[in-house]
Length: 239
Figure 1 (cartoon, rainbow, N blue to C red):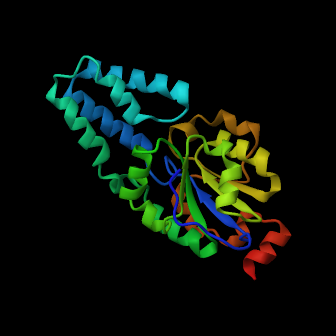
Figure 2: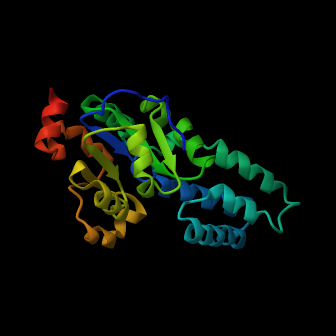
């Protein structure tokens, strides 16, 4: 878990939680650039081998483990000088260039409506690096949580950021549905229909999100009342 400094005091009336990959950051485009780099540095066969290993790790751990995959990928390539350059590509990648249009403006806008944090899944090296070097860590003023599976860590999230009502903004309807099961009417779910997971959103049928938008930038047009707060949470958030 990566987070900013601890917060004390009474629960906030409302708290905004924003996913990172394919919500604020175009992770699909990153995968395309990584594929091109693998093919250029090695060949098509090695590129496909990397993604085959990545798929297996996804099935086992449920996260995009780029660094763990690279550790396995090195087998048979230990003498290839291009292998050492992959570390630089992954960790020094210009992540800011792959933020969705208006992503930082959306974070700034959301923070005018209430306190907010990035809430992401991922490993504890690559994902924090992405958040920091994309500018998202600063945009959220250090309020960042990274769990292996965020929908299973809602008790930890609530201890870190106690609130009467939450808003979760995410591109994965299955995660929104899982969080809704736990938090019920204390959570407003916002489904951002971006990226590969949103495109295959049959899981959305498990529990329809409260709000749907096509692009993250659309949130700039939303006001506090648009998030369907309970009457008590709305009163406390506005006053």
